[in-house]
Length: 258
Image 1 (cartoon, rainbow, N blue to C red):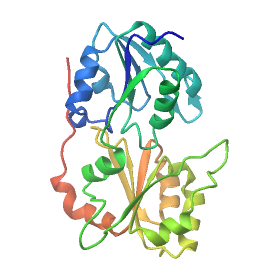
Image 2 (image 1 turned 180 degrees about the horizontal axis):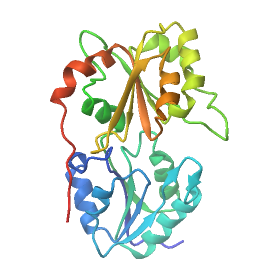
Image 3 (image 1 turned 90 degrees about the vertical axis):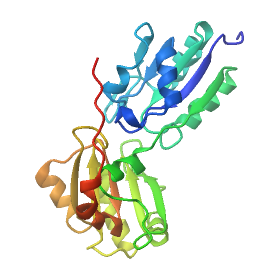
Image 4 (image 1 turned 60 degrees about the horizontal axis):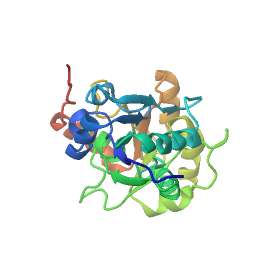
């Protein structure tokens, strides 16, 4: 294969609020020739894309994969042959449960120039917008980010929940709302108290952000009663108790209109 003409930028779009996207990422969108974007990228950010750019939806949502991972990578390789600036726009940060490392490795193997532009991950931003600091001198000096995503139709088996429960004072679970009925018993078996607070945050940092607060012993039933659903993250630990006192100081998501 001939050397690609252009360069692929793996850009983190952040969690949703367009005001949280980096200046570098926004500049690349404004000058891109092609943008291949994920499902969780907010409409406000998509509106900042160069109007002359080709836009390709490569979003993946549970049960609704618009493109396979291999197909997305091949699109990036192909577009880099004929375009100077190709942006792979990913929700949050490309290297935090975003398959950015996999895509970068495949692009390098194909001889394509590639650069990562980090983004703010939802595991930090969404709790902040809900008045929940993931660390606090009086409550938590450690935080673990972990995926709760299912794999091949069953609950992911290789997460060591016992080690996580015993080794971290704050646990942030990505993509795990549907699997909490399987995750929580493992956390309890590892020694966490049933009264340990947990917060679920849906559409974090967006205007329609919503929270569901409970304990490990009650949250599954509360989810069923309220029909709370993904996309959402879960925060487990004493820092969740700060929600009531700190939420008044939370930022208001920025809205951009043409």
